[in-house]
Image (cartoon, rainbow, N blue to C red; front, side, top):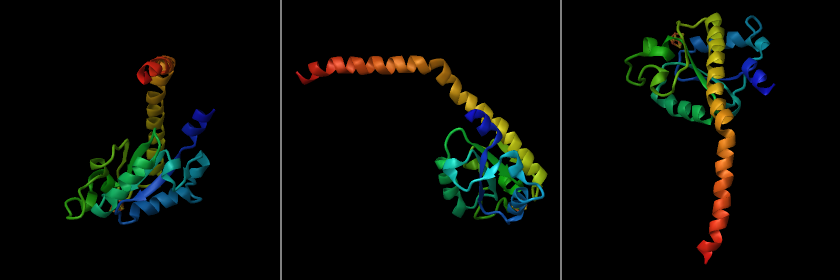
Length: 173
Ligand code: SF4
């Protein structure tokens, strides 16, 4: 049941990495009553530790990149990155400027690219839905080895613990 909730109700974290605010306004429109992304169970959490999807806007300036990477590192696996807008995908109109390197994928693994200047609310919602598919694939990739080898791992762990307990008295002697 938890997996079903997670699949259908991802929490998002929005980070502005130096955008002109055009794409951010469109993200806010998604959260507003007209597009109402929350009706799908998608919540803008603002907390990296509770978020499944990171929505990034802007070309990633030198000032913002460290915080961006820190936020990404705080998110629990599995996690998905959605690059919103031309700037985030490639640098857009800011590409080649002295304070940006152009595109978020220089710093983070991007799962979904949403083009457009600015990206429209429909495109952003579509990007989040594509992000859900990526999230599901990553969840499976994490859980499958556990399902296959979980029992084997526990056997090896307890065997090695028993072995250590047997060996310890000899070590102390
Ligand atoms: S893609 Fe366009 S609207 Fe979005 S942040 Fe860049 S310049 Fe602004």
